Length: 60
Image (cartoon, rainbow, N blue to C red; front, top):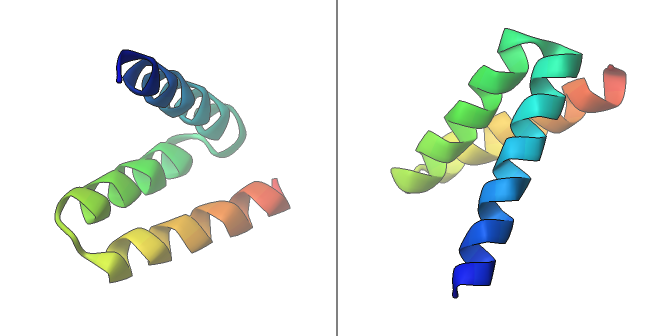
């Protein structure tokens, strides 16, 4: 259980750093929107932010 939490935390950190490096503030805000959408159980917000984030990362 602890290993899963540590792995998840490291993955969030790496994604945040990579998004900030490539996309700046917009990438970090999209990651935040995905997290909020998942926590609030708003599938539309989470999926929309994930798709936009993936598209922007491909373009960067």
